[in-house]
Length: 295
Image (cartoon, rainbow, N blue to C red; front, side, top):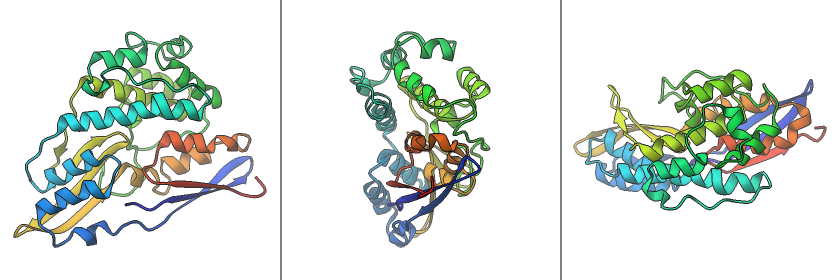
C-alpha cells in the first residue's frame, strides 16, 4: 500500500509552512509485472482495502477483462461518504454521530432527502443554518474557518496519470454546481467547499450509477469516494508487462497540491485546525502531524 504521510508544520509571518514527506509504499508495479492479467485483477483490490471495488474495476477495464460491479462501486462510494458525514466528522467536531439513512445501500432519492433533510437547497447559507439533515455538521465546519483560510485553487483533473497538483476530489467533480460556485465565491475553495462537495457527490451517486471508462490511451478512470483512480496496464501473451497507477492522494500531496496549499493558507492562530483540514482532504494513507516547537 502507499506509504504514510508525515506533515511538519512550521510558521513564518503568521502563516503555516507545511513540509510533507511520504514513506515508501509497496512496489506495486514490481509485484504485479509478469503475472497473468486475471491474477493481477484479483490481487490489486486485496492490496488496498480502501476503495477496493474502484481499484479492481480500474484494473479490469484497462486490461480489457470482463467488468461488472457498478452497483458495488456505488455502495462503496455511498458508504465512505456517509461514514464521513454521519459518523467521523461529527465526532471530530464534538457533535453527536448520526445514524446512516435507512436502506442507504440501495441508494435512491431517499438517501439524498435524508442528508438534505428535504429537497436540495438553493442557498448554501440558508440551508447551513436551517438545522435540516446534516446541516449542523457543515455549519460546524464553516464556523471554524474564515473566508480565504485553508483554501487551495488547482487546475481541474486533466492529466490523470501525472502525479502533479490537480483537483482530483469529490469537490472537484461537483465544482461547477451552482451551490459550489456560491461557496467558492464567498468563502474560497476551503474546508467548507470540500465538505459540501462531498455532500453533493453523495447526493449525486445516491441517484446515479457510476460509469467507469477508459480514455484513448487505455487509461481506466474510475470514480471513488476520494476522487478518480487512474490505472493503465498492458499485457503480452496474457502476462502484465507494464503498469501505472495514480490515486487521488497522489494528486493531493504533489508539490503545490491541495494538501500543501490548504495548510499554507491556514493562519498561525488556527494551527490547531490543521488536523481537521487534513481529515476533510482525506488522504488514503495514515498521517502524522508534527508542529514546530516555536509554533
